[in-house]
Every structure is written in C-alpha cells, then in structure tokens.
Length: 119
Length: 111
Image: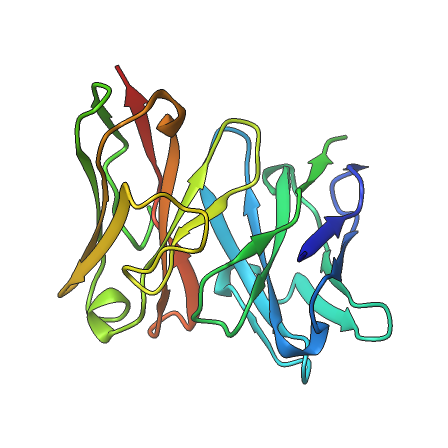
C-alpha cells in the first residue's frame, strides 16, 4: 500500500532553516511527483510547490520563491522540503502528498510535520 | 484571500443533502483545469474525496459527488451522516500564477 512517512516535529528560531523529509513506499517513486502543502494553526491549506521525482523539475508558489527548495533522493525514495529564513508565520503543519503532475490531485498524504518557529 | 472561493460554513441535518461551491476564474477552473476535493477530519491529514471534477477514489461512498461548470465547481453530499462533519477544500491549478491553488475551506456541521 502507498505510504508517505514524514520526519518528526521541529522547533526553530526565526531566521533559521528547516528540512522536512517524506519517505515513500508502496509504489514506483519515479513514476510520480510530490507536492508540499502547509496549514497554519486554525487556517486553511496552502499549496507550496511540486517536484517531479522522475527528473527533478520543480514548481514553487510565488510567495515562497527564493526561500524554499524541494529535492528528491531516488535511491531512498525520499522527498525533502527545505524552507529558509524562517519567520513566525511559517509555523504550520507541513504535508507531503503524492501527485502525477503539478495539475493533478493529491492522492496520498503524509501524516504531517509540525514546524514551530519561535524565539 | 484564496484564489478559489468557498463558503466558510454549511450545515445540514442527518439525511439531508448539502452542496459546497468553489468559485474560480478564467485562469484556473474556467481555463479547463480539473477541480479536486479533499475532506479533513479534525486533527488529521486531508483525504482525497473527488478527483478530476467528478471522480471518486475507491472507498469513497457514492453519497459524495462533484461537478464543474464554467468557472465554478460543486461538491454535493447526500444522506448526511454525523461522520461527515469536517472541513472540505477544493483545489485546482492557476495558469496566471503557475501554481496550485486551494479554496479557503468550508466547515460542514451536521446538526
């Protein structure tokens, strides 16, 4: 069965960076992409970006351009999302999800990773 | 302000039918991009409910249905059950922004 298992909760100070991992299993990793979505406390879902696990192509939300980098390691079927220059409003639960392409549905989701940014 | 507009809340009694609208524009839904719907129960990750405007993944009851017309889409839930109480989100792609977009979410209350 398809599973996406994310790394554990993080607490970071403003200005720091965080790197969240998402380990995939149960399917051919390079046949799909990974999207990242975040949800601030009590708020809605925010699309962050997408990466193709086939060729590494990326598509980032304009709001996060320059601060976010998404990568994959095909040898371990793991996707990563790094967010730099953290601010308090980056505090959120971060989700990875399996997708076919940047326009298709997010079919399977990870359990979420809480990132707290606080001084 | 979300690119896709949903009502903040809807409610209905058990057994009733409710609909949730998702209004976009000519650069997303109106441009022909598919609309997908997600259900998020409290404290859990979102779950895909409808993909490609009107398709249900296996395991999703046929009480849930989706449709799309012009620059809008709708999610209908018939035979409301207490377990349907959740937040619902629509999602599509926007060609002007070149990024995926979500609606602001709709909280469904089963009375």
